[in-house]
Structure formats: C-alpha cells, structure tokens
Length: 284
Image 1: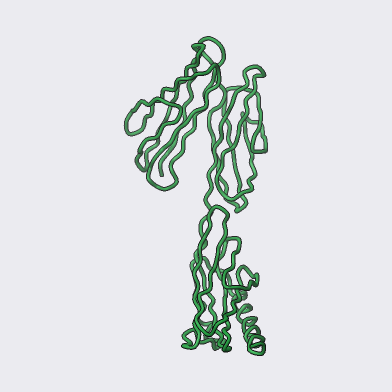
Image 2: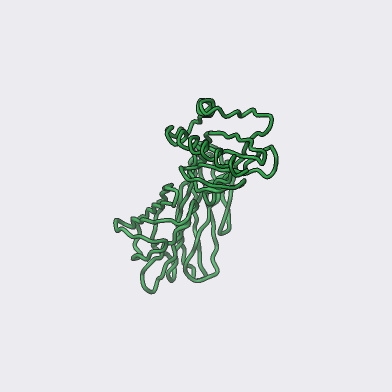
C-alpha cells in the first residue's frame, strides 16, 4: 500500500494546513467544512475513524487513542498543537484545543477528522508551614503546593522578598505571603500570620493552617505545628456558623458553602509555655 500511503499523506498535509489556518477555539468547532472541502467521506462504510482521549491533570498530559475500522493493519497520523505524531495512541502536553487526525487502512481506504475539545483547567494550590529556631531567633518557612511541577516561589515576609521552596527569616511577629507559579502557568497565593510571642516558661510557638477539600464536599481540615518542649497539647476553637471546640494536632469539620471559618489553636508544651495562632478559610 505504499502508493496509497503517499497519496493519503499528501491529503493529510492539506488537512493539516487547513486545521492550522483556523484559529483555536476553546468553545469547540467540528471543522465539518474542512472535511467537506477535502472530499473526505467520514461516513465511509469501508473504513471509519473515531477517537477517545483522557487527561492526566497531575502532569497536564492528554492521551489520544484512534479507533479505526477497516482492513488491518491501520496507520494513524495526528496533528496536535502543530506537531505531527504517528501511531494509534499518542500523548501530548496540554493545553489542547484543536487537532486533526487521519487513518489509512491496508485496502487504501482513507478518512480523517478535525475536532476541538475543551481544554482542562489547570488548578493549583499552595500553603506553607513554619518551624521556629528559638536559639537563633529564626524561622523556616516551607512551601506545600499542588499543580504541575516544577514550581517557582516568591515570598513576602514582613516586607522582605525571598525566593525558593524553603526560606529562613528572622523570627518576628507579622505576616508572610507565598505566591506559587507552576509549569502550566497556574498561580496561587497563600498568606498567614507568622512569628510568636510565647507565654509561660521557656520558648514555644505554633503555626496553624487550613484548607478546603478540593473534591467539593465542603470538608475543612486544619492543622498546626508546635515548637517548644514536647509533648504538646492542642485545643482548637472554630467559629463560623457556630462555635465548636476540638482537640488534636489536625482536625476536620463539615462546613457550609459561603461561610468563612476562623480556627484558633492554643498549644501548651511540657514546660508550661503556651502560644496561640488563628487562621481563616472560606468555603466557595
């Protein structure tokens, strides 16, 4: 089938050019006018082409699988993001809007399609934890993010700028804001109070944070890191549509959409030192 293959690929080249000359449209186009102008019979009873695709949100990868019917073996060619790929199964980095694909079976039957898909949204989150070094009067802030690696990090800690996933700053009460950008261009920002003013004997501190479960079930989780003389006790007061008390380093509760919750945790260490930190979170 070499002669038919050459002829088919010539037609594919036209198909590719037609697709690439059309602006991308994330709302979707089926390009039926292109198919018609090329004389491709997508309803050919001798061979038919279709496809499926899956999306890997962790790595922002789209995988396409051709589903051709005809005389085996069947050859496949794809044009996605202006890259030409061959094979029944191909994978590309997102985002993806418009693409073209075609098949040629062993009897010389050729058909193809241009189509659009809605690109999957790139979602990312970020937060940070703080550990305190009472001997050196410093604190270390460590980023915790989700999205498409690698990430870049930009910090504003009490008006001083830092970069990197982990940074060390003087221990002074105030604020810290972390802005994370992932490889897909998604940006997330997280701010919280930092520093501690210990009471009781010795030095101790606590850093609290909270987040809403991304699955949409309105579950809120709050956790805290304490410094000082272990072991520690943790007592939480959560206010929002009602006031509830919890104990433990990590707590969870079922919230309601549109409600802003404040979670305050007070820790006590083995030297009798206590410290409190509060964090707020809103359920969309």
